[in-house]
Image (tube, rainbow, N blue to C red; front, side, top):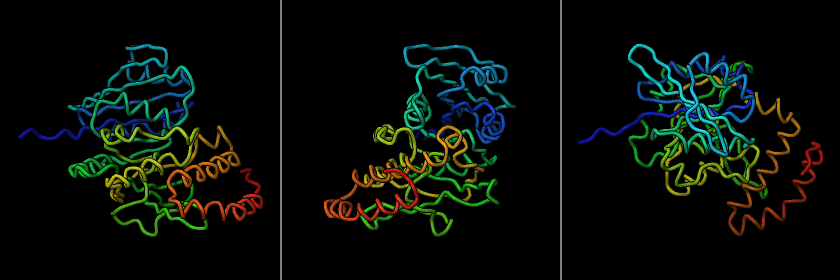
Amino acid sequence: MKKKNYTVSVVIPTYYGRKLLEKNFSSVLISLRDGDEVVIVDDGGFKETLMWLKKSFKLKKSVENNDYVLYLGEYQQAKKKVEIIYVVNKTNLRFAANSNLGVKLAKNPLIFLVNDDVSTYPDTIKKLAPHFKDKNVFAVGCLEFDHEHNGAKSGKNKLWFERGMFIHSRGDDFEFGPTAWASGGSAMFSRDKWLKIGGFDLAYYPAYWEDIDLSYTARKKGWKVLFNPEAKVSHNHETTNINVFKQRKIEQMSWRHANIFTWKYADIWQKIAYLLWKPYWWVQRKRTKIKL
């Protein structure tokens, strides 16, 4: 009987990310196994990131089309060989489309989607990959530590409907088990199932709620979305987005996309509740000065 392939493609979306990659990328390489690969999809800051990667991994141009330029390199350590794929977008796609492109170009059956502001532990991938022996597993999320905020934990989540809206928050505990969604910043996915769903919904452009939407769709199909506290990462949340959009803009995007998600997935009675509660939420957002 042929042994199933559990090799991993790490997909890292980046935007002016050289400094973050210099800080975190080495930890990702340490966690990889022989036969794994890395796909870095660059949405901006091409020259400085390209120069650093060329120097570090001897990248060479392989493919160029109307959408992107693709470079190939390699990382070797002892008996471990990891292919490095670096993709430079010719137009700015933002996070969801950038991630979808990386998954499409990946060759391995498991996708470890990681932000460029995430550093992994040496055994992170080893803790995640075995879960996919269960053919019904769609995704497994990591326990995230935010060392910029006294090591605050996240990664396990909950989602519920209240006052006409879907609301989300951090989970009540960090024990192994189902989670409402696997974070787009540090989680492993079945590539085949990702492609069957169609990846991140671009309605959530430029960012926020796309990972909640993806996991919700998977769970509606009967696939499992899990959280494993033994798979650990350090994640300084929103480092790139805060620099690009600023906090107020992020709050506006998140609220707008909460409305998109609610209308997309609400049943008829929930849609009626959404419309009835809309004045209430308008007042709440007005008080916090977040434009609707």
